[in-house]
Length: 186
Image 1: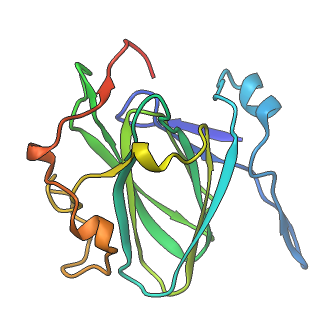
Image 2: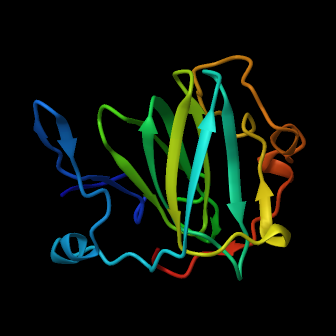
């Protein structure tokens, strides 16, 4: 399993190996033992989510779930291609407000580990794109939130994204108060 650190401590790119032959490939998309051997200990996952976006240019985010139901996410693209973004919003963090963006696709098999305390969003680059992600906490409607997708200067690569009502109504980053506190680690 290939593990890459990013500019945001705690956010990782994880690329499981693919074993290919003339039929296709096989890959273990998640293996706790392999990660543990590599020195990576992720929290337990309690929920898997699967998202389909029909149109290229569909933007979902920037989302979070506030404490005490904060979620870490292990995100991958099961079909198609996305530009996936994580933003550190832990008050007091040395990287507060900083972000990374990575292309995740069916082709590259890359996954992004996003700890709790980060905003998460993605934009689809192809029609009928599927995103699959594991979460460390169950969904809690009262803790669900969003920050406006265009209020952090992120270059999403599109001018007019396809948005949900929730994402259209999200507050700008400058007008939003983070519920996350930096605790010296991720």
